[in-house]
Image 1 (cartoon, rainbow, N blue to C red):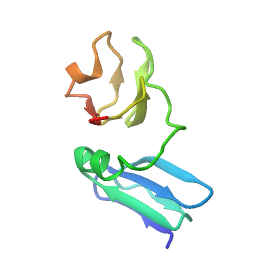
Image 2 (spheres, helix red, strand yellow; image 1 turned 90 degrees about the vertical axis):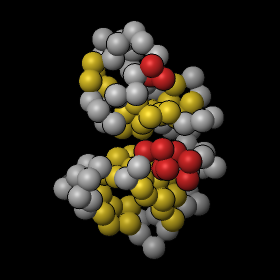
Image 3 (cartoon, rainbow, N blue to C red; image 1 turned 120 degrees about the vertical axis):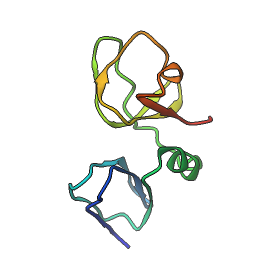
Length: 107
């Protein structure tokens, strides 16, 4: 079953099958599609991180360094998954100290 999504609000997704995994954020009002047979979607970043904890996502981009722009998206930092839900310029602070920008997994 493929995914065709035009969400009313930002929606976190992972689409996966035997050969590929697509991970990202479907931004409100924009179309996202995937031909992968399985998917998990949720508008709640905490719920999405919990629902997808069992899925290997080795190709997530690393969180940008301080001073760089961090777009809304799903990142890895020291092996931990996190979601940036508000675009911003990265500070020197830990993402766990900036809940106005980030939601972190419990890994």
